Length: 398
Image 1 (cartoon, rainbow, N blue to C red):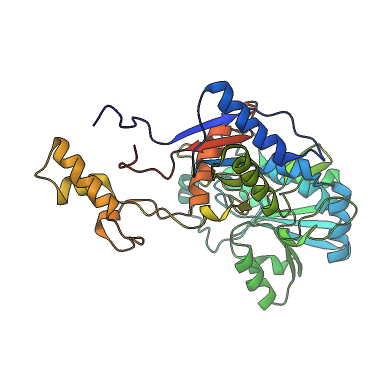
Image 2 (image 1 turned 180 degrees about the vertical axis):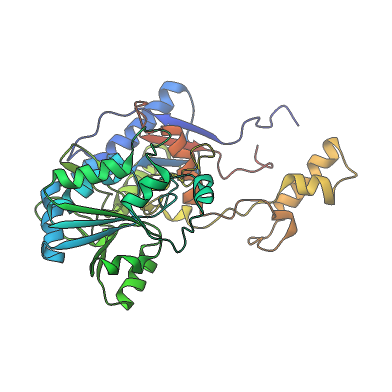
């Protein structure tokens, strides 16, 4: 490589920002924070840099909050205050517990049907090894709470230490509703208990609703609850999906329409620097933890809004494939030049090309959102904005 060749590829920086409150001019805060960080740290913005902001600060600026009472009122309106089958919820104090409080408050009885051995995103109620040892078939067997306890006893979450079966049952009773807990993986099982069903799965909700509607159920999903305002926040597209606990009695909903926001940030950076950056809002990343077996994506999507330059998937060649196959006889500068030439001449669409096998065929927003989620963290880093530079560079860019 020459002395002028860039030695650094993709860089992801967490950008510190003020604490965001309802009504804040978020576009101005985000743009100013990135520009101040660039000046403070001595780096320059470039075309196709990506500025990403967490969905949390977007929803907070929008003031998109709802209460347990709001949820209860909507549940009562949809199901008449009678028995409700709550099926396939994820096991989460942050993501579902406050929603469940509202659901229980709006019903006389809750039949809580939990998928097993784990929820949709991988939180275990019981290990597969225990399932095998008990001779249970999770695809067909329906377990009562008593049978579950007899076979598997108490099972606390590996990371939180919570027995979610006990926790959810107690929470429902605290809200004044009766509760019956069953364990099953076939949606139609709930119809043995009630025709009123709230499908709480995230990524499989359309299929669940289709199956239950065909079977004659009165069925709604979480994206149908608070899809219109009751007295507080709402989300016309996602309802309760993507919500997070705010207080013991309120949730912060997923951001409402925010395409104008990302375009505003993009325009502010262009005006200030002359650089055309891409901008996105991100929530959960889309990756799986190998230890806890938890799939991170509890939001309905990784990115609810992004600028047009982030549409699509990567179009990359696998360098090690080229080095080991097409140019296996070359080394040093000759190898570098040959690979660089291949990159410069690559097609716009490499689908089916052997030299692209092993690259990641995922949406750009899912890949970059995952990088940003890992960079910003979910705790006290204080960096709800992330600047990603060099993501669209390749081996030929100096």
